[in-house]
Image (cartoon, rainbow, N blue to C red; front, top):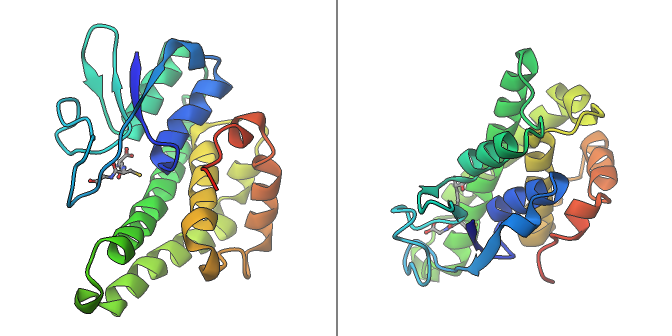
Length: 203
Ligand SMILES: N[C@@H](CCC(=O)N[C@@H](CS)C(=O)NCC(=O)O)C(=O)O
């Protein structure tokens, strides 16, 4: 299989952490890709018409995207149980969707800052994205700690950890930990996993 990859993409990182946790890393060749909505650069347009990564090319040539589809596929392939059946499945999927939603807002803020010309920026739009993130972080701490602290590793936990790490990477001045010590404590323990250490974005 070939994974279209960037070391700074948190969605790619979800896949990379899963590959390490499930012992499948050697089955995947990484293909560097970069681009953005204004310039698709080397994005795998033939594999994902949306021009985004991750995209996973299977051995038979079919392509899978986005990160949630790829993670579900690789979990099934390894019979790894990162999406447990039963009632917990719905919680895992909502948790992963919450983490991805944090990332969607965080990345829009990055594009706003990096791509949009300064005289065309609209600060309330940026603040609105952070408000979404802040609400989601509060919900993680108020509603999801029992699931996050469960010893049974799942994709919801991995996705949340990748999202929190991305906030450190791109939005450190916003200090997501302030007032969220329980969530921060969980993340401090989770990020010591070998899979998280091995996939840190470059400094
Ligand atoms: N929902 C997608 C989001 C993927 C995504 O936005 N990836 C970013 C890289 S971090 C990207 O490819 N951006 C290029 C673009 O939006 O044109 C997923 O979960 O895979």
